[in-house]
Length: 174
Image 1: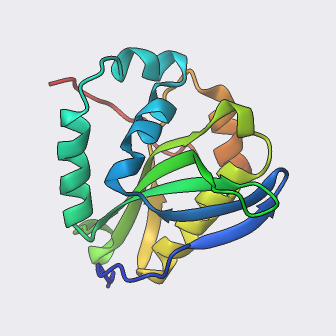
Image 2: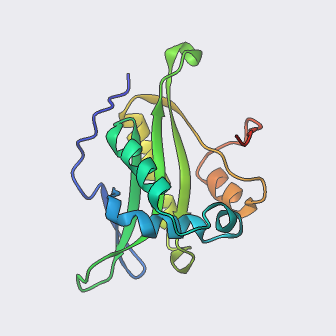
Protein backbone atom coordinates (compact mmCIF):
# COMPACT_ATOMS: atom_id res chain seq x y z
CA UNK A 1 0.00 0.00 0.00
CA UNK A 2 1.17 3.52 -0.75
CA UNK A 3 1.54 5.96 2.11
CA UNK A 4 -0.01 9.25 1.07
CA UNK A 5 1.27 11.32 3.98
CA UNK A 6 4.18 13.46 2.79
CA UNK A 7 6.28 14.51 5.76
CA UNK A 8 9.74 14.45 4.19
CA UNK A 9 12.29 16.97 5.39
CA UNK A 10 13.42 19.72 3.05
CA UNK A 11 15.50 19.38 0.97
CA UNK A 12 14.33 16.06 -0.39
CA UNK A 13 17.65 15.55 -2.17
CA UNK A 14 20.91 17.48 -2.35
CA UNK A 15 23.71 16.67 -4.79
CA UNK A 16 26.76 18.40 -6.15
CA UNK A 17 26.49 19.21 -9.84
CA UNK A 18 28.51 21.35 -12.21
CA UNK A 19 27.83 24.90 -11.04
CA UNK A 20 26.90 24.24 -7.40
CA UNK A 21 24.51 22.14 -5.35
CA UNK A 22 21.23 20.89 -6.76
CA UNK A 23 18.39 20.53 -4.25
CA UNK A 24 14.90 19.12 -4.63
CA UNK A 25 12.11 20.49 -2.44
CA UNK A 26 8.34 20.77 -2.46
CA UNK A 27 7.18 23.73 -4.53
CA UNK A 28 5.61 26.75 -2.88
CA UNK A 29 3.12 29.22 -4.31
CA UNK A 30 6.03 31.66 -4.71
CA UNK A 31 7.65 29.20 -7.15
CA UNK A 32 4.73 29.36 -9.62
CA UNK A 33 6.20 32.00 -11.97
CA UNK A 34 9.42 29.99 -12.28
CA UNK A 35 7.49 26.74 -12.82
CA UNK A 36 5.29 28.27 -15.52
CA UNK A 37 8.40 29.73 -17.14
CA UNK A 38 9.98 26.28 -17.27
CA UNK A 39 6.81 24.73 -18.74
CA UNK A 40 6.64 27.45 -21.41
CA UNK A 41 10.32 27.22 -22.37
CA UNK A 42 10.03 24.95 -25.39
CA UNK A 43 8.15 24.79 -28.69
CA UNK A 44 5.25 22.72 -27.33
CA UNK A 45 4.94 24.50 -24.00
CA UNK A 46 5.12 27.99 -25.46
CA UNK A 47 1.70 27.55 -27.07
CA UNK A 48 0.08 25.82 -24.09
CA UNK A 49 1.37 28.10 -21.35
CA UNK A 50 0.84 31.45 -23.09
CA UNK A 51 -0.78 34.27 -21.17
CA UNK A 52 -0.03 36.25 -18.06
CA UNK A 53 -3.02 35.12 -15.99
CA UNK A 54 -1.64 33.20 -13.02
CA UNK A 55 -5.08 32.44 -11.53
CA UNK A 56 -5.45 29.00 -13.21
CA UNK A 57 -1.96 28.01 -12.04
CA UNK A 58 -2.72 29.18 -8.51
CA UNK A 59 -5.93 27.12 -8.46
CA UNK A 60 -4.06 24.05 -9.72
CA UNK A 61 -1.30 24.59 -7.16
CA UNK A 62 -3.86 24.80 -4.34
CA UNK A 63 -5.44 21.49 -5.43
CA UNK A 64 -2.07 19.73 -5.75
CA UNK A 65 -0.80 21.15 -2.47
CA UNK A 66 -3.96 20.03 -0.61
CA UNK A 67 -3.75 16.42 -1.82
CA UNK A 68 -0.94 14.27 -0.39
CA UNK A 69 -1.19 11.92 -3.38
CA UNK A 70 0.25 14.67 -5.59
CA UNK A 71 3.63 16.34 -5.25
CA UNK A 72 4.79 19.40 -7.14
CA UNK A 73 8.56 19.53 -6.81
CA UNK A 74 11.13 22.13 -7.79
CA UNK A 75 14.85 21.80 -8.17
CA UNK A 76 17.02 24.70 -7.26
CA UNK A 77 20.64 25.28 -8.05
CA UNK A 78 22.63 26.86 -5.24
CA UNK A 79 25.90 28.28 -6.54
CA UNK A 80 29.14 27.42 -4.77
CA UNK A 81 29.69 29.86 -1.97
CA UNK A 82 26.20 29.53 -0.50
CA UNK A 83 24.40 32.27 -2.41
CA UNK A 84 20.63 31.98 -2.68
CA UNK A 85 19.47 29.26 -5.05
CA UNK A 86 17.23 29.67 -8.06
CA UNK A 87 14.59 27.30 -9.44
CA UNK A 88 16.01 25.53 -12.50
CA UNK A 89 13.80 22.42 -12.71
CA UNK A 90 10.37 21.04 -11.86
CA UNK A 91 8.13 17.99 -12.08
CA UNK A 92 4.88 16.63 -10.68
CA UNK A 93 4.66 13.18 -9.14
CA UNK A 94 1.26 11.59 -8.49
CA UNK A 95 0.35 8.33 -6.77
CA UNK A 96 -2.60 6.43 -8.21
CA UNK A 97 -4.44 3.41 -6.83
CA UNK A 98 -5.58 0.82 -9.33
CA UNK A 99 -7.58 -2.36 -9.58
CA UNK A 100 -5.42 -3.91 -12.31
CA UNK A 101 -2.16 -5.68 -11.49
CA UNK A 102 -3.77 -7.07 -8.34
CA UNK A 103 -4.64 -3.68 -6.90
CA UNK A 104 -1.25 -2.19 -7.59
CA UNK A 105 -0.38 1.43 -6.94
CA UNK A 106 1.43 3.30 -9.68
CA UNK A 107 3.12 6.65 -9.85
CA UNK A 108 2.92 9.10 -12.68
CA UNK A 109 5.55 11.73 -13.37
CA UNK A 110 4.59 14.70 -15.51
CA UNK A 111 5.84 18.14 -16.44
CA UNK A 112 9.51 17.22 -16.12
CA UNK A 113 11.48 20.30 -17.09
CA UNK A 114 15.06 21.49 -16.67
CA UNK A 115 16.05 25.01 -17.65
CA UNK A 116 17.85 24.81 -21.01
CA UNK A 117 20.88 26.62 -19.53
CA UNK A 118 21.32 23.85 -16.96
CA UNK A 119 20.80 20.70 -19.02
CA UNK A 120 23.43 18.00 -19.39
CA UNK A 121 24.56 18.36 -15.76
CA UNK A 122 22.70 15.29 -14.49
CA UNK A 123 19.80 17.30 -13.01
CA UNK A 124 17.08 15.47 -14.94
CA UNK A 125 18.53 12.11 -13.96
CA UNK A 126 18.68 13.14 -10.29
CA UNK A 127 15.00 14.15 -10.39
CA UNK A 128 13.79 10.99 -12.10
CA UNK A 129 15.88 8.68 -9.92
CA UNK A 130 14.54 10.42 -6.79
CA UNK A 131 11.01 9.95 -8.17
CA UNK A 132 11.62 6.26 -8.78
CA UNK A 133 12.87 5.78 -5.22
CA UNK A 134 10.00 7.79 -3.73
CA UNK A 135 7.56 5.68 -5.76
CA UNK A 136 9.14 2.50 -4.42
CA UNK A 137 9.07 3.89 -0.87
CA UNK A 138 5.35 4.50 -1.22
CA UNK A 139 4.71 0.95 -2.44
CA UNK A 140 4.19 1.60 -6.14
CA UNK A 141 4.85 -1.30 -8.48
CA UNK A 142 4.88 0.74 -11.68
CA UNK A 143 5.92 4.23 -12.77
CA UNK A 144 4.48 5.81 -15.89
CA UNK A 145 4.48 9.07 -17.82
CA UNK A 146 3.55 10.54 -21.14
CA UNK A 147 5.90 12.35 -23.48
CA UNK A 148 5.12 13.94 -26.81
CA UNK A 149 6.13 11.86 -29.83
CA UNK A 150 8.35 14.68 -31.11
CA UNK A 151 10.52 14.74 -27.97
CA UNK A 152 13.01 12.16 -29.25
CA UNK A 153 15.84 13.35 -26.98
CA UNK A 154 13.53 12.87 -23.98
CA UNK A 155 12.68 9.36 -25.22
CA UNK A 156 16.39 8.45 -25.31
CA UNK A 157 16.86 9.94 -21.83
CA UNK A 158 14.03 7.87 -20.30
CA UNK A 159 15.10 4.70 -22.11
CA UNK A 160 18.62 5.17 -20.69
CA UNK A 161 17.02 5.20 -17.21
CA UNK A 162 15.23 1.88 -17.87
CA UNK A 163 11.80 3.01 -19.09
CA UNK A 164 10.21 1.14 -21.99
CA UNK A 165 7.82 2.51 -24.61
CA UNK A 166 5.36 -0.30 -23.91
CA UNK A 167 2.06 1.42 -24.68
CA UNK A 168 0.61 3.90 -27.14
CA UNK A 169 -0.95 6.83 -25.30
CA UNK A 170 -3.96 8.77 -26.52
CA UNK A 171 -5.46 12.08 -25.43
CA UNK A 172 -8.66 13.95 -26.09
CA UNK A 173 -8.67 17.71 -25.60
CA UNK A 174 -11.79 18.77 -23.70
